[in-house]
Length: 182
Image (tube, rainbow, N blue to C red; front, side, top):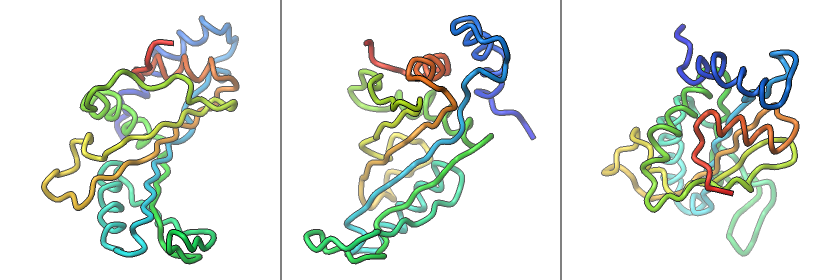
């Protein structure tokens, strides 16, 4: 199996740079990616199940892996949602697929966002994970614009083994994430 381009770059350039910056003594101390979760929430899918099916096929094309359908945990009368009804889909990427997706997202998809000024560096949690949302799925080249029924957004969570926000920020910055200036 071929090693993903970003994983190779992590091993040869990014990890040694992180060891210098943070003074790690062992290569195993260097933070790395653990998983990437892509989530699409579609409340309108309660009325039209076709929306959820097309969203699931689109996320499968983007991620290269079949998503799971998420169901509501409780009933919400105002939104006409019953307990257990399908309201979205998500996919969890690990290992090679995770690096391939992140590489495609950084080098191809994010530059296609209109009026892009950089991702917010404030979206890190205390555990070193980074979460952000995209307004439309059309920025990914895998999606055929003519076949899209409805434009919807998605949430992307990048989980790392970093212990602090600074470590996670530096890891993703070295990987090529286009953060806005602090």
